[in-house]
Length: 295
Image: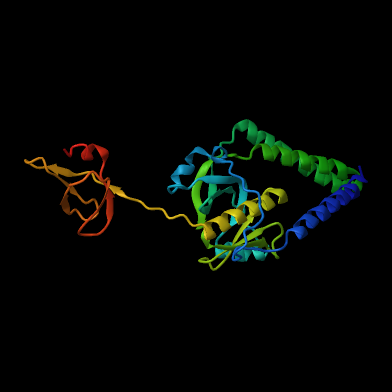
């Protein structure tokens, strides 16, 4: 047991070196000002099923907008003060889902149920803590002989406390959202390990995101690079029309419709569904039921 510490340390160093190699291979910054599209395989698999049911309370999809990817359990730093503190070593642990649509990037922070500790849970926690403290006192009194026992107690205590962690049940707030056309680059942050930095046009400070593993972070960068290029170089014009809800039927069977924008009344002379108002110049839609009244 006494030789277990150096062996585990060597294993951690080995995995750390492998992780650093993966990060170094992806350290280059992806900028989106180039006219050449990134060579990335496009993935269209919708992942709305991975989100909690209340996501629609925070995200309203535009016409032709769809959720393309959703990344679970992401830590995001988006306030300037939090980023400043994080660079000093004080990292705020936000947890939430990062939602990537074909038009924007949004972050939904988790909502947790209030903790309700039963008497049994409280007794287990107190006994585990006392057991650990007795082991620590034994190590101080007897020297190095009880170090393995103290380590076992620490592992048991951490596992017991982990059972009391509350899983998320929904979302509390939308942390941030930004249009894909406003994103200029993504790169690995130089001062915070394994944090991706997302630079945008309208934000003075960047957005920092931390994923569960490096593979997921690299997958996010690839998917984001394609969608950002598509949003910046192939913008889709979205035209929205209001529908007429009020009309008048005259004695001579003439029909007058009221513009939903300015309220001006105009006679309906044709069966064209799209009409341009003579007063405000905006277009609106005539329902089919009204058009069928024209003789």
